[in-house]
Length: 336
Image (cartoon, rainbow, N blue to C red; front, side):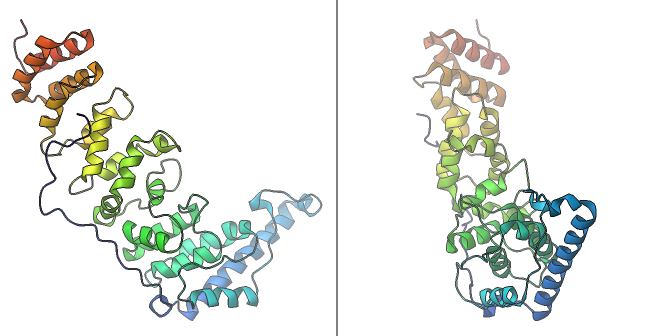
């Protein structure tokens, strides 16, 4: 049957233990000098932006644009600074966002947070800053692009957060840790964890194995668009979780050609895969039997010769027979 691994996962598999997030204000203190520099950079940027608009786009004074980059912005004031400081001084995991126009934060705050993300800032502190300006999560529970860029910058400086640590923060704060998979697999814009070391990435996918397995076979919710980047991520794992193995074999032996080769390649190092493929030679679907034969031939798995001959003797479907004959030829076995 497709979907049941032939060999159990090896003993001694590394565990992906989710970290306990320290949400205390004391453990995530931000230096006063950092905050002073932050506000100065943000308001300086706003002043330059407004002056540029007045000089280059005087028509906006009478006909405002809806484009966020062409909108004048009011500088942040002392009340904003006090609200921001109160947010950072709280032990709360999830807090209300600052009620200003979000476009101002996207244009003027996000670049400053990215530029100032350094080893003097904890991931929780950065998350609180992003959340305050409504730059952290979107309606699907995943990260918005300013958050992706800021956390990538912080990781480059400090090695934190790991992907699993970031997912735990998101879960704690009311976003979705599993949705972080889409941020990682985003191939058309900024993706989280670009350039991160494997050990900062694979525990996330190990811990969220069930969600990953579902995403592999889900054809709804735009999941196929995120799938190409998921296979390389799975190759980082020290071993494949059972749920993921089931989903990969379903794809690798399925009739749909999309991602079939990628699924087979991802299973390349899986122990005992040949026995599972041999079992598929007796599947009730001719298309599955044909794919199994093709895969065995490509692997040059010589112990499969007898099983292929026996399957060929019983096979009545032409496409499957042809695949079995070609597999035997690849194994240098006579087919007369």
